[in-house]
Amino acid sequence: MMPASLAHLLFVLALWLGLGWAVPAPAQTPPAALPTYHVTVRDGVFTPKRLDVPAGQRIKFILKNEGPGPLEFENADLHVEKILSAGAESFVVIKLPPGEHLFVDEFNIATGELLVIAR
Image (cartoon, rainbow, N blue to C red; front, side):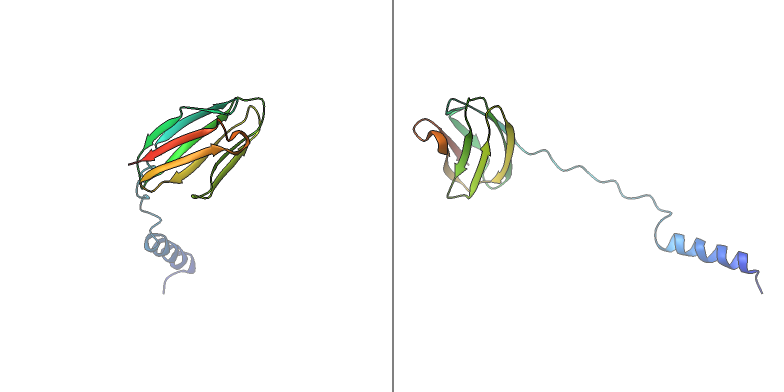
């Protein structure tokens, strides 16, 4: 018969090997960076006014409001809405279907338009 301490040690060793703890974890590849587009809004005017983006994949808009008032970045059809105070910066991640998509600044409808073409 085996001493209890040796039996315990063999049990822990078998458990350790059986659960895979003795094997290094597989290397994880970091996720691919999202295509990123910088959009600045100053006095209700988007810069740039038009963007060409890939359709059907996630993209990131980094929005910067350089105006004296708030900005409401919106596309009602796509259910996208982001409000930024004056001087604020934020982002929106979205996957666009193919076609033309008009984003507006709800606070400056007359001048605040950004046309995004997804191909």
